[in-house]
Length: 113
Image (cartoon, rainbow, N blue to C red; front, top):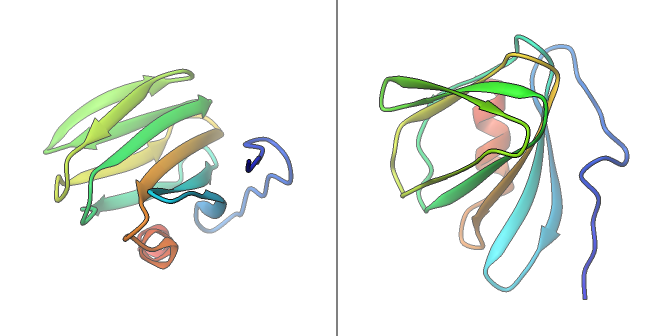
């Protein structure tokens, strides 16, 4: 059994979203993305399918040029290589599920863009 918390040891950084690896399972890596209001993860693609959950706050989530407002409790699943972006409309906590074959560094690099 493995456990983690989406709300403990939160770090809101001023210059970019904060990315943390919470859990690693046999098939996925569970990441926390902490965005301050106004922070952006520019358009990018994931090499494997992903699932995004809005745990707290509200974000604008762009998919293939279409913008969706996602609020606390929302889930969205994307296939591999689908262009998407995130914009914090409020201070937000986002859970990101990625493939075990994907890397945390790739997600961190997107946050630096």
